Each structure stands twice: as C-alpha cells, then as structure tokens.
Image (cartoon, rainbow, N blue to C red; front, side):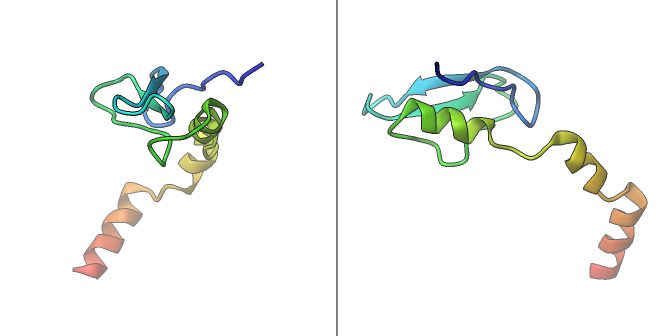
Length: 82
C-alpha cells in the first residue's frame, strides 16, 4: 500500500499529488496552501512512491525548532556581519 502524504513541513496544509501538465508520466507533490509554495524538493518524479517519499522526508519539526537561534542571537549575528 502506498505511503500517505504527511502535512506540509512548512505550513501544515495538505500535500497533493499532481501529474505534470505536459507529461503525465511525471508526478509531483505540492502544498495546497497557495501562500506557502512547498514542494517535494525536486519538482517532478517518474514514480508516485518516489514523490511521496521525497515529500514525507523531512527534519523533525521539534528538532528544527530547538536548533533555531533566538531573536537576540540572530540580531547579534546580523550586527557582526554588517
């Protein structure tokens, strides 16, 4: 059974498999939130399972949040770069 699409890693909206308009042999997964623009990295895949796997392969959101610099740290870095 094919894997289910996880929510968009950027906004949490639903991802959708979409066939390529010019070549139906290719398929991509794209976020359905028009303001987001999330996609499965490489836009088009020859196999549905490859597109789903690429869409579902992502970093743990909680782990990413722990690694984000605080606003003050980000500002200090920006100040030293200028």
